Amino acid sequence: MIKYIGSKRTLVPRIVEIARRLPKRRRGSRAAPTACDLFAGTTRVSQGLKQAGFRVTANDVASYGEVLATAYIEADSRRVRKKALAAKIAHLNTLPGRDGYVTRTFCEEARYFQPFNGRRIDAVRDEIDGLADGRVERAILLTSLLEAADRVDSTTGLQMAYLKAWAPRSFNALELRMPELLAGGGRALRSDANALAGEMDEVDVAYIDPPYNQHSYHSNYHIWETLVRHDSPPSYGIARKREDCRAVKSAYNSKARAWDAFAHLIRNVRARHLIVSFNDEGYFARGDIAALLESVCGEVATIPVVGRRYVGAQIGIFNPSGKKVGRVSHLTNHEFIFVAGPGAKRLTKSVGAE
Ligand SMILES: C[S@@+](CC[C@H](N)C(=O)[O-])C[C@H]1O[C@@H](n2cnc3c(N)ncnc32)[C@H](O)[C@@H]1O
Image 1: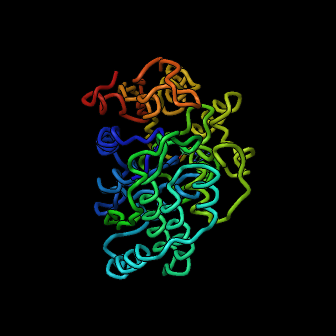
Image 2 (image 1 turned 90 degrees about the vertical axis):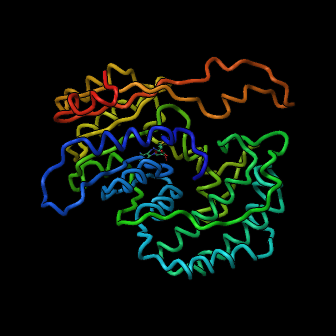
Image 3 (image 1 turned 120 degrees about the vertical axis):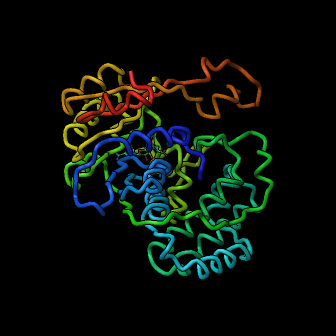
């Protein structure tokens, strides 16, 4: 799985346990419960829900989010032609490197990958669209490439900067591996969550984990966006971001617009229960979120969880010449899981609700 700020890696078991305990509408004894992850990112939470037997729709506005969701949520490992895929991955691993956009932009103009790996990324990316048999296979091969590139990058997990000295892992050779696909069906979407909320079929549980401050995922993960789109856009600044990073902003990254977007989403989303993640570094106050959820869903429980801040905060603050210049104010953040809908309080008591 790629490094991703705001990823709910450590919270997945808790979120899944809550979702499992919430009462479901009866649709016949064999029908699977349904869930929609509206801001799916890495799809970690979607994967947990899929493994727990939910039929999951994983949505994100990012192109790389759709690719990850197609590979991990939409693809059913029992139907994938694994031998053929393994042969294609082996073939991609033998391709000689080739100078291209990634080498030039992200290895010479910037230093996200060592040039020998950048050339391999260029060669593999050029090959994938012609090699893949259909949309799902393309997504699996792209996921394999994203994860391989992530294992040899030279960042702290964000693509707004690269490390001054090469990260030790960047010296390793790029190696594509078969993603660990899951059994079962699901759906991948690339929509604005607010547009999707009112249009989707009602689900048992909607999981809502929007961006919580001004930092745009489109900018923070511009390399993954470019690798998936394969569109060689003009780039700018030391970070060599895609030109459209100046314009593409989520409403959730704007202090002025975020609350209205969130309130609109909560009022419109078609789900019996909502599970909402937020942390104390975000724009919204805990009490405001709880009050909104209570007014819309009738009942809300809050589960506090302490998390570690992203790896950059763990490392410290440095000036451009690599000297440590400041102290990070805190290394932990306080995350909250809100559960809203009928019976939320009673059901979540045993998982630490307040
Ligand atoms: C906090 S992250 C979600 C992390 C995810 N739960 C995980 O564990 O990987 C927020 C996600 O929202 C996406 N996003 C931002 N604005 C959006 C919008 N309006 N509609 C849908 N997705 C959006 C971002 O691309 C990002 O992946």
